[in-house]
Image 1: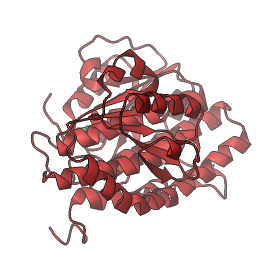
Image 2: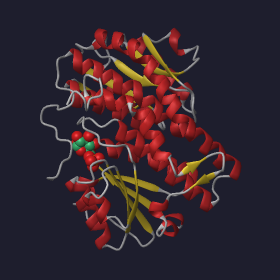
Image 3: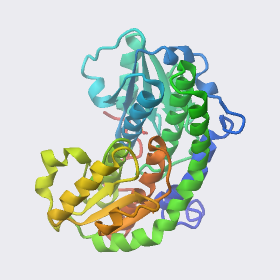
Length: 369
Ligand code: G6P
């Protein structure tokens, strides 16, 4: 096992560090920014359905569902197709409306999640085309899909998903971009810019590893907190959910992720010096609004840890701690901004003496409903 961990203390840490490579692997043979090409052989036959889709319905569970939320924003921004993101467990029991022209995308690391499988079966029985985004080759979900794109992240052993999540985001970004290209909802120039930027993501993820020492110090200071709030907006809202989920899963600290603007409708009542708040406040279209939210938390005595874009001069003046991540476009920021949150939950869990790779009550793949 020590050999499999490749010198890391836990699989989770190894897998966090593997993300530079796994995101690259996910694009290899598919994306070539220099040549301006993006080829997704896995969805060749049903590509037309996606291009002409009236609506995309994404079904998934857990971390994969968070990847689906990011994909919703990507498909809407790039390809202008309306998207609904469903918990597979809810979708399957709701007699959902599935219309002709709807395309279902199932996202799953393991490819064995019972609820996701059942949701796909239901969608297929109603005539929908179902595409899969899976990590495990030959898994049940991969086999049940009409077609699909593998994430090629390699085996993920840690129960808390890390590299599978960023690989899912990479695949979903590529599917959304390819669809947009066919639909002509992105100019050729913008399309090429996105391809170039996607190729730069592995190096930007690697930059985040330089934050490890700082995050270890922050973790030491906050490891005894009983609750955490994670706030983000736009593309960083699903990142807030994912950051909170990571902390819950492995450190057993209660954490909630929320869209930053919704704070005023409830969570703000919880803010005091005992409630650390993690903001994901990178430079994007909602930056100014999130800055106001940080001020609101500070005014109520809350302690804030903020993920910012490198070079941010404003937030360090008001935050208790900042961690700087490299700049990228809004749509790809989740692949980068999630990394410090993965590290934060990892270090806090280790300091609390938790079994990071096999947290209590959780399974890597949930094959029962
Ligand atoms: C379990 C795992 C999570 C995962 C979820 C969905 O709860 O512990 O890490 O996100 O299942 O799994 P899937 O394999 O379908 O992505």
